[in-house]
Length: 226
Ligand code: FES
Ligand code: FES
Image 1 (cartoon, rainbow, N blue to C red):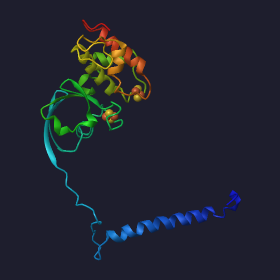
Image 2: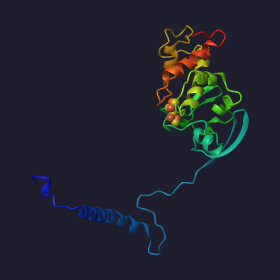
Image 3: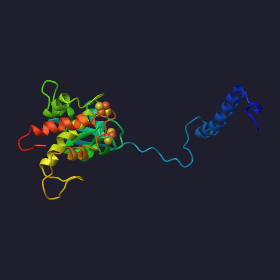
Image 4: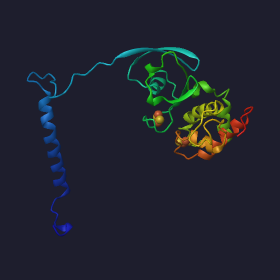
C-alpha cells in the first residue's frame, strides 16, 4: 500500500471487525463456563477458591485498645482506614514507595501498606490522629503549618509521622547514609533530615518547607540544635 488513500477500510468496517473479534474471543470462555445443566464448571487448570483465613489481633491504636478479627492478608493500612475509619493515614502507592501511609509502631516509623495487621499483636500504633487533634496539635504539626510544609496535604500525615520518628532516630544516635561517622552522634542538619525523609515523597514539591518545619521543631527541643 503506497498511500493512505489506498486504505478502503471504512470506520463502519472497522467497528464490525472489532465486534466480531470480541465475540469470537468471548464464545469459548462462555461455552467452557457452563455445564449442560447450566451450572458453573471449573475452568481447566483452575484451582478451587480458598476461603480467607480470619485472624484475631489486639493492638493499642492511638491509646485505645482494639480487638480485631481480620483476614490475615489485610495490611495494617487497610485495617486503619477500612476497619477503624482512621483515614488520616493515606494510601498513595500501596507498594512501599511513597511514604504516604507512614505510621508509628512502638515509636518507630513503618510503611503501613507493607505490613500485615496480624503481625502486630500487642503493638502500640500511632497514626496522625493520635499525634495531635485540631484543638491540640502536636508541635510538629504546628511547625508544618507555620512553614507551609504542604500544598494539597495528601502526603502530610505520613510526612509528619515520619518527621517525628526522624527526630527520635537522631536523638538516639542512629546513623544515616550521610552521617559523617558511625560512632558519633548525628547532627540535626538539613542534609541529615533530607536523607532521613527521602522515603516520603511529596508530589507538590513542598520539600524545602518541610525541612524548614522539621528544623524549626528540632531547634525548639532542648539539646537538639540543628
Ligand atoms: S502507600 Fe505505603 S508507601 Fe505508598
Ligand atoms: S503536599 Fe501534596 S503531595 Fe505533598
